[in-house]
Image (cartoon, rainbow over all chains, first blue to last red; front, side, top):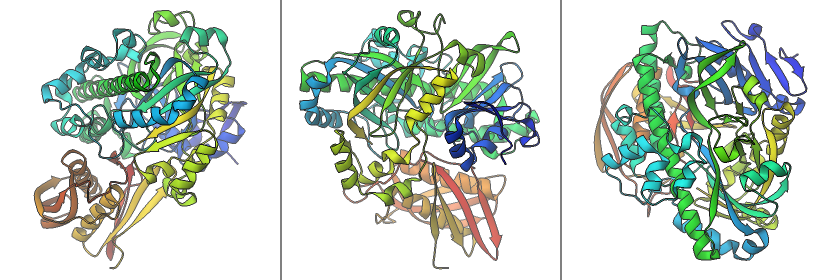
Length: 476
Length: 138
């Protein structure tokens, strides 16, 4: 018998009685099918554990793609009072500003399909990907500090893309309050050679076509139309971000007793936002986030070059770029009054509605694009943020499909050759840096992204705009 | 003890269960487990030597810091761990040398990017012999 309280068809409350020490309730967005999957692992316990942290407001949230993570569930959202609350490095995660961007071409499916193999070969040559692959920029540490401070703006200034791109990136591609001095030498050493690389795991660059438009007005505003070729890039802050999180988990664990904070899971280590350690982490986190913005900006540039050389048309307009793993100072209505909070999004996407100053002016009457990548070989979605998300989820929505099968089980159940053949039969061409990397990411190793998106849409915390189907995938 | 470590799998995780007659053996086998996730069964020579010195608050913390060091060296310095020679090891500190070699794409096939060592379900136990469970973010 579940202890969850079903609120309606798409929401379940985790009551404070779920575990001792919960200061706020949990709220999980799921339908009957997804909640069964969510109950299989430790997601509920982790949502409840987060609710024990000091100074949180509202509810400890989990999106429909939620699954067990480290400390925080992946798909988790938690907001802390800016004055009295905490910042948790684990609440952002190891891959700081792992995120996704969508580029819209001027070409149709019919125009690209005949050359898809050549296009993928070119992209695979131009975008460094896979485990251990170095980027192409030999950066000095001074230049790296410039990247950490300025993010995508650094990339544009150095010839990767255009000024116009910056307006369509969350935070215009530059997180404020970045402080490269708070990033350890180790983190910088780990990340220096990795700028401009896709990475491995679930990161990808995908050539897709728009298969369905649900909201014509929003799609038109985003520059997305039926049958159009688009490119989705999913990557993060690479080793630099991983090391920043590792470093600050240590810092926070050591500092916690000083602030009288005790936690139920070591991975939840946290410190007051206003503490010296909290400020240092936020400066380092913003730096790592900027590394990720620059990273995706560089890969967009190479994608445009590949389109230009193979297809003769390299115009790819940046629709938007969103963070999946981040903590941000925002203003939200809490218990009827406006409050400054720090929103942790761990595997969740900001989903702001129209008329918000943070939304680019050309999307001002529509809302912020919310980009939801599917697993390899399945569909992806563009959604738009809603006012309901502001009321219920601190302006947040889901981030993807969510893993359902272990990497080992995925590898055992198919060979890379079989998988490549199966995908080819579905009209999807694949280039992968490693065979095991491919099979680990096979489509059925993940939850059904359409189901996840449907729950978000029905619950009203983001609305469907368009659906995309891949024709070519590049995997690390 | 024949088995040095075992790979553990959950939907979103990869971890290891490592074993050792002594704490020293446990730490060496844990590192071998982590490197097997990163570099598969690639043969790693022990021609290069690095000094290592780590302190911690408890044995679990020591294991996380130790494995984070092995991971950092593989990702930033491209140093693949082969074996360790400890001068001193207790539950809260260790001191010694790492032996291994630099990553060579012609020889080593990297299998997986490990992002970090986590505290998730972390356990170090002594019941006659030592055992440890640790999960990695991949």
